[in-house]
Amino acid sequence: MELHRMRWWHLADVHALERDLFGRSAWSVESFWGELARPDRRFLVALEGERVVGYGGVVVAGADADVQTVGVARDQQGRGTGRALLRALRAAVVEAGATHLLLEVRADNEPAQNLYRSEGFVQIARRARYYQPDDVDALILRADLRAEVTG
Image 1 (cartoon, one colour):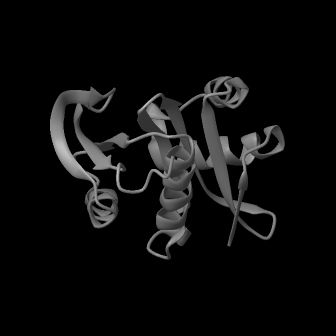
Image 2 (tube, one colour; image 1 turned 90 degrees about the vertical axis):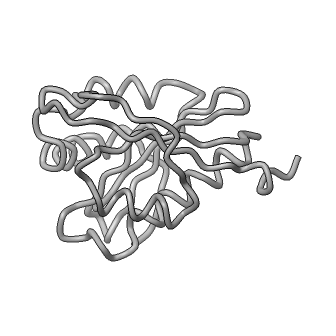
């Protein structure tokens, strides 16, 4: 598995994976196009050969950064792909000078919560019924990056 910067030619595969993973709450392909066009965004894909097996993205706004999305193909979950993406995104925001990294995770997604907690994220809030149309709460998690910022 290799990580690469997400490019336009990955979008059809990324969007298909997004639809499989997130169903009715999946981002549109236009949303991905919009994210790639923004200079304050960093999106990566995980590739097994030519196959997109994962993706993730962050936005940096000064000292704060937010994980926009992370998705890993069902047959690749539990193999370190999500962790590799998360660490690469974290390194990118540290390099950009961010001191905190935030994300939202579905309250019913225990594997993702376990990954994030093992990477130093702690819950700071809960948003009721955030994920629509499924009425699922979001847990807001934050990692303190101040010890990692080198500049």
